[in-house]
Image 1 (cartoon, one colour):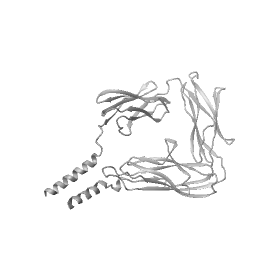
Image 2: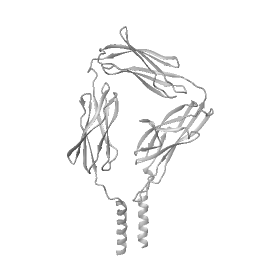
Image 3: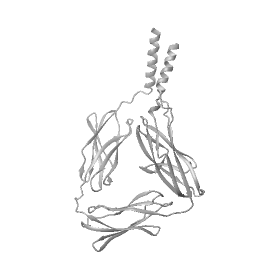
Image 4: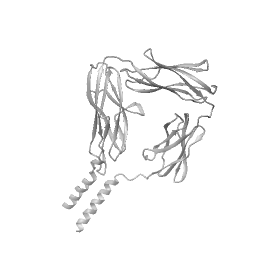
Length: 388
């Protein structure tokens, strides 16, 4: 009986063992310094978290020290939603936006705290297995809070690209906020054709946070009535009633079809195998590597065990040139089986080559199988030693 007890203990140790090398973490930069932050305002920075381990790990995001009540975290792809955790696959990294909001009644002083990242231990499952080791990393943050308001900015570039009738002219102004308060520069645009002023407008809706460099896009929506030819845009950037820059920039409206349209369906992905009776989120990625923006939508045929059972389609979205976009569609999973999605992206009356994604929806297994398997091993060992 003693031998069987020892075997059970050893088996438990083996099941619960999790090598430390399976998880690891890094953070960059290791120190953040922000000077001259105005009380009642906010500053923004980005950190990168590295999962140096081999497995997907969930991490908590928090702050401590003087700044513990001032910091919130955001995903760069969803800057409107506060996050407190992040999941990072093994050997990969993720960027996180840090927003620091300084209360109105803060004293002018130097404040020191830290950004703290910690792994979340995995709960013990029915097999007695799970990750228990907690690891972490921190980045020091130093703030100098001031009551002096500075409105200051610089325009590093103004760029206009050619287009075709019916597509917008985009005036891209690269603006850097060098002050310590939110800046709202005004972009005044006058469109000339020859000696005639044909359109004018102002873009003053973009807020730029302190220390941030932001591309501000002002658009002139052309129509098919705008004739191909040479044009000039007089672009004037104004901040706090001061002219930062004023340029006359030539551009062309080209004949329809001049700019090539081309795009690729780069991938079709699913996050997890869903339970039967739930929706499967299908994510397709379209890359616009043509010379003009285009509208794109994903459409696919769905096969189960070789038979066509459904079609799925995403919303149609506009994709800027040299950008990649995620197109999302949904599939209701009704039965187990071998599934295949054959999909393509339709854009500007063109189609990408078809890509395939295959996956299996298994028959739902009996709960507690792992525990039953462990019990079988124990009984085998027990029987073996009884025989001896």
